[in-house]
Image (cartoon, rainbow, N blue to C red):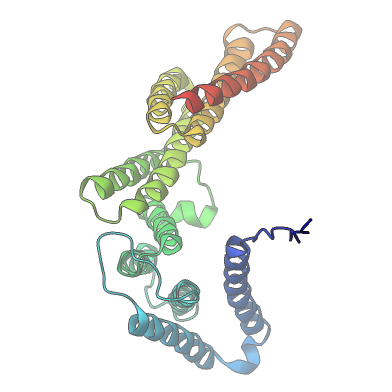
Length: 307
């Protein structure tokens, strides 16, 4: 009888995401380390030297990216090598730091704080589309939110740190609609289709948060905003079924649960003026609703898998 030497099969394990995470953390730690080093030695180094150092890193990073980038396309463009995205990210970090340092130290924009955020926002959006980088797109959207908040907020509110303002809530609501529209037209016009989820994800959270904030801020008409929240939640329920996305199902469920709980507690303690009975009823509600929410998510998860 012949003996067959059977060797055990070796399963390969991918380290792709682990390496990407380490590289991203390395870029963040490098930027943070440079900032701490500059902060602790600001008196001995000098502001001009610091600005030149930051500018040198920024120019070097962008020079490398412009030299090695692939041709621009409206579709997805893969990076030319493994380090390209991280060098580009470092260039954007240093660019924002450079502009912020100029404003902080030399007050180049004066009291026009909106301009100090508008310029980096434009540069970040251009970089995100030109080099096809979703991470920088998130930075650009964050800069857009900062610019929109500063543009509608009076200087006195910024100085007093009082952000309990209806104008900020409505600005966030409009900004959410703008982000959702950007995601829609990205697919409709076939311009960076893969940016759609980033726009929709951030726009969705901002839409729900601004609606909840309006409920909490405008207490006299909170029921109207609760109806708006219910309508938005139903819309995302349809979207979740259409895209078979448990993520969007989970998002709208949690936000709607917060709004529903706020409405019920408001009715119990302020509309019906209940005392101890209101406390007992609210405890029963939270126990029952938590169980109901879990059962709803489990059943919907099974339903999405069958679609």
